[in-house]
Length: 328
Image 1: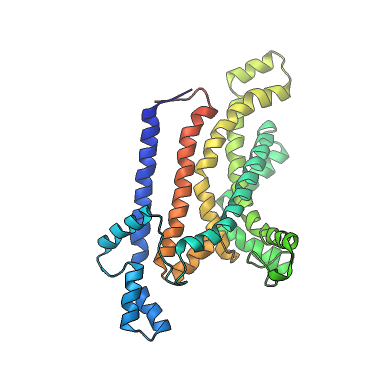
Image 2: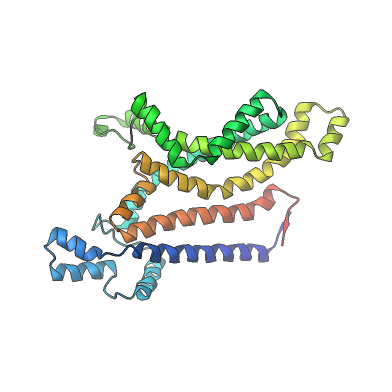
């Protein structure tokens, strides 16, 4: 195993370049929607007072209408850790809104990613060990179907049957309206209960991808010469599967986990909208409806950072996982 400093610098450079492109698109795309938030807020609070409009433009950094000047000021503020002030929730800071929304999104992602990775790998290996069996046919067929279904469609079906028809789960949100009446333990239980359907909608689609990838990797590993030799030596089948085949088959799955993180993040954002879950996805949805540029920019910046960081970590950590890899 060898990772050169040149390789690390190159991957970090590509990550920074990707981040710059994401931030640039994040800045200009919301402004294509048009509208003047300063005039809108002033019309709601002070009958369009010119003094208030001027003060709000200064607060929002809109005094100079040149978009490239605003683009430069945006980078300057980012360098100081300032994500701006929300237009819709003025005078709340964007960082404060994201701080309250992130725990819900991170909770959904952590639970869904970890469970789907473990369960998907286990099911994929079982299918590879029994190729052509009824278990393999059912699991693979179901996985192909679920892998082609969008996250939001799965979320809508679960909401329809699990919450609306069966009334077994809440219709949405993360807390009941009477949350202040519960103690800490009761509050935790209800938060978990409200998160069952959102997590399940992410799990079903994510597990399907891990099953298909692991099964293919395992079948390929079981056909390798060193596995055939291990069986010819009379080693126990369990040892051949776990010690020889599984260790090799799981290496690509690790990279696939990192690369699929962006897909899962996008699914989580859409799932939150379906369930009115108070995470980053719901915050982005409301910000788009209200032309709240700073919130849109701040939320997508966090998402871009997470995805780029996960891919960079996969590039740098993989040589440590697979000693055969030499990256120079």
